[in-house]
Length: 457
Image (tube, rainbow, N blue to C red; front, side):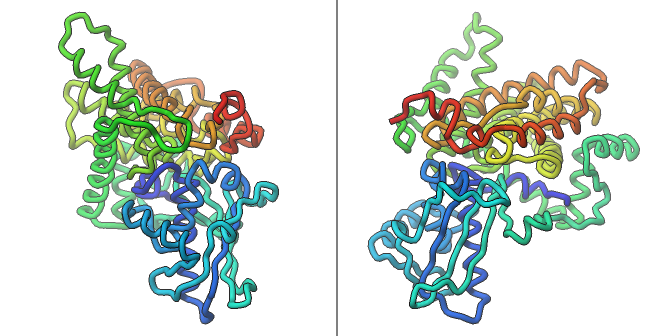
């Protein structure tokens, strides 16, 4: 399976790629199934299982399902129209998706949070039903939201099928070792190999436009986060910090006695800005997930704004290499907090950002692999324990520290010649095994860790 840069970096809405974007996309897929069927449905029902049930309220899964069944999609989300649709469906108990007849759907009764019945395929599971006029099930599909906005049906999960590029791509690396070996043999950079893989499925102009759009959305998210003050939704009363931090940093600029470590605050404020926007339900880019969306853009902005010689034309290479590393982690382990904890989200994002930064700073393929490994290794075992099930604490600050680790990892790798003890592939496999051993309480269920030790009522 060869994942495209646009599979790793998807434009969508917050607060969660697995709990918000995934369920919305699953609902849209179910509508497509109904549009292609011979029968007429009179009602709809959704049952959420596992982590979707445990933290669905905090992650806006209920809203995502309702809006997905109403025809909304993450990539062209209209917040005003969405609020109007939610209110209308709540008042009437009716839903009218595009291209289908109006159907019964009463969220209080037809959207069920089943905390007691996990499904075997994945922790993020949902079952959608179409009902006839008597309320009997006439169509059913099970969907698994497997992280990063990827959604698989039960049948697709069973055969391990997902989004693919053609199998005859010129550089079909399945592991980091193969990636480095192919780069060494071909004399090409990892960014160039990834580019040539991508253009086997789309034109050069389309690829350029797509990458440019990804960075524009990332950067716009940073700017909105830096400009916006107030309290985040969800009930924790968590104040936005990025705006105040940014104003303080701007005021200190140019002072003679500014400590060198203040650059860490700049890296942090970019990441915090993104994840505050994500927590507020704004437009973000999965990188590789919404919960870890701040790491990669923060490191890019750090590079562009603070590193001499940085140039905007290098952003494409940064994103291509980051997506190559993210694809390897997704294929060989997981990027889902519900599967492996936050090591798979912020840990993966930090590895991706470290690799991208190492690329644009002139690193060799071996140094890039080393940078990714350093960043990932030092997130191993990190749990996912969101307070009140919200993608806020510890998630927002965790992105800031993930970005700082990425910069440090790239710098350390560039100080060496690429040789190191722990291969990235071994680190990825260790993350997978650690995730299997990790208690479910620490995998996005809000049943352990900070979620139970910090008062949140």
